[in-house]
Image (cartoon, rainbow, N blue to C red; front, side, top):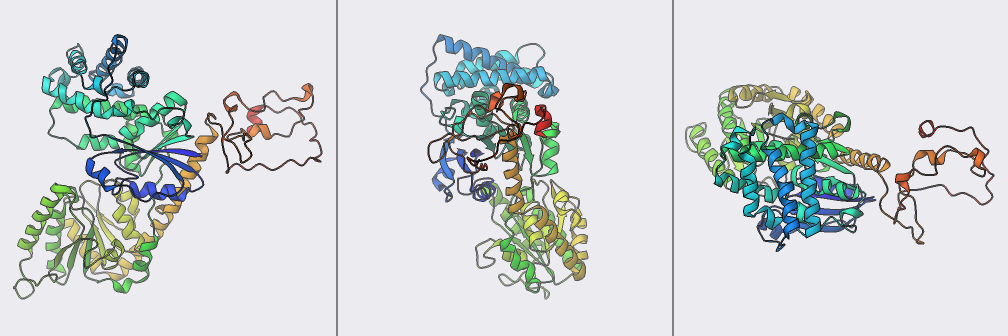
Length: 582
């Protein structure tokens, strides 16, 4: 198959979100071809370049989401009238007074009609960027917000708010103006796989609209939830209108997708709340490479029995402040305990938070057992980074500790927790995100922002090495069963085949001799019947109407050869197509 992999700020860029997961997927499915369509988020991301790509990646096309360049497209009178109609309908839907209308069929159809109308206009005219940033777009938004029966926050929108909303919508709708939607572009793939919701899934929606290409959406962190959690200081009108857009885009994505694959139950609940059909949801846990952590599991003697380890990106959401206060209580019960905080800051905010945590640790633990200051590197709390003198890799960090701690107040899928489980280490975690689903009874879970509960759980494990060993062994067994690369790749392989089996053939594939080969053939054409006479023909054709296309190349479809001397198959009673397919 030929897969169109859609990403935003991720693969194939170095350090992109979900880049490692996508790379493992592509490399694990080497018998398929991948066309990567990627959005970049900044100039720095583009300057960092791409990760090494395997040979099955046959094409990479990129587009920036952060620029404001004019596309130079000037619309005529008819195109301007079409833009006013479709953008006006979009603005009316976003400012509608009933938030529950996101899932109402009539409102969903209105949003879809306006979205695909704008897409068709962009396709016909060569772009929409200038129109989306024009004064006309702002006036259309203002007219929609001043109409009767609209959101109160929208009615109170001022001109600066409308300018902000128009600019944000222009960025979100930038995929409409790309030249990806041609027969030799997304029209040439067998299915689109969006590595996240939101903007990344929009090209998949348009490929389905223009070419009937099926869409698979994977969300390990729900993009709509991320939008709700960001920009809390924005004016109410801006938050309300943008939330309406992202909510309706999510609902349309879930409605059109052949399958939606959340990475955990926490994400699944969000998707169902936003209108995803339960029958088309398949939970696929992220896959981790267990190999680097085998040594930690097989060498428990390398662990310091009094050491706690925290790993991750340093940022306020990780709540290291509560962890440091909890460790103060741990030291009172276990005087020889040590805490290793291993990880770098996440941006300027993370750097400031790291300095705050260092200052707090210096106040809480000013001296050693004799009251004097600690020599460098010998204190009860150390701040380290992966790649420094120690540890060189994350596996070494987990191997050095007796208990791994997660103290977050916000968490999606806890990758670091899975790595600790693969290392056969006992864990203490806060009850956030998908933590309970991942742990499954193989570790201790405490409420977030509760230093006393966190301290009590850590002390209980530090004092009981046998319990630590039992929990660590159970955690590794669970991680190997549910969270490996192999199970992740196998799950998507099965989903690709299932989607292809129920999708129309729209691409011609040829074999090595130039002959067309069937790509998706329904099961009923293999029913043994005698087709030599009209009286014995079954009441269905050799292939249904949607399977009349022929593939360009299909190395994965194997059909047994028919010898020239084969004995004619005797006639069999007529069987309805639905029964034959069984």
